[in-house]
Length: 203
Image (cartoon, rainbow, N blue to C red; front, side, top):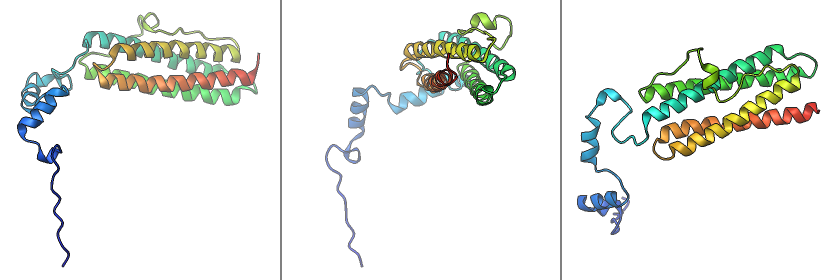
């Protein structure tokens, strides 16, 4: 028969903490006690994920997200236009890139719309005023190089916009920040892809 080993909790570990010690530690690092969390959760339950602990200005965040949504939709339309209009031998690989980017921008738009709803807002999908809300422009471009150039400019605009939104949200809305950071990372990839295509095609 094997001997049973007993592990004794060391002083200062979680196993040896008293309720009072747990409370002191939580207060020291800024955590809310369980009793308060439970009470807060019962208030305004119709607000879903929007709990009393939400620190950002929801109305402002929703406005920023709607502007970003308009930007993504305009990008989808521009990429689709370029996909269908690109011609010539050099366009074969570029067309695939246009379509891939259009698909990914649509995913971004969906993510933004979902987050807007979670925050208690409504995604503004109205065509009226779409271009004025969008950060990037809708420029068609006459040649393949012009199309890629305009898409690259739009991606660079989006990159700076998302960086500023991430900085504004900060730690007040971790979920929105995560969404924005994910989109930002992909926009940076798009910009690098387009810059590489321009180099391949030459002046």
